[in-house]
Image (tube, rainbow, N blue to C red):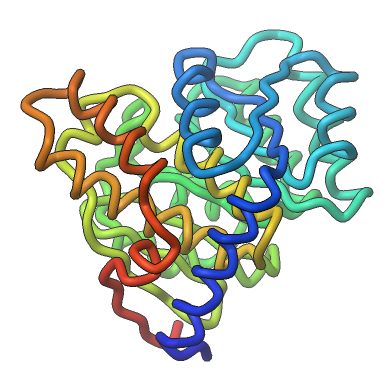
Length: 278
């Protein structure tokens, strides 16, 4: 099990590596949030590449350092694009981040998410209901296909998803990040609770999607667990700071991107968190 000092040291290393290298993390993401995902990736020091065609997905899978796959707002071409991209990532040994947005809605979404099981994403990021439902779909502990997913909203608490998150992380050998008022990140052995954020995050489109994209950026420079923790920490820090400068969602979104950009490695590592054994 990590110590707090070890986690902080590795977060600092991840942030500094990304800012020095400007790594590319490709994304196949929700069409509603493409712009915000790309801007968040750029703000933390990464390079963005947004694609949707099958051959482009396979290209970024091998050319980039990591890839983010989000199943929101699916189009028919994604039935080919997403499995081909996930397979290319798995075959190349490249880390990728899965965001199981709105799991349980529609046959295509269910088919794609079930198929991803064999390609073992390095990081899974979702709200509590999505994490519980994915564990259920994959037949893992803590999961249920009756989880109360309401579109992209969660009706389960973060702690209710703890068992499912741990089971998913153990299965993939990577990490799971559960977003909520207090965020949970686990590698199946250690569970970290990260604090901060803002109520305005629920009032803008793409705060969760862009977190997945930023996690992919950090996955180019760190282990899945540290990458997920670093992304979660910088989001909680930036959200907390942006709220102090904003009066409403529009000004918050701008301030949030600014805070992602100006946050130092040490400040991100010092964002409050608690940890315990899984």
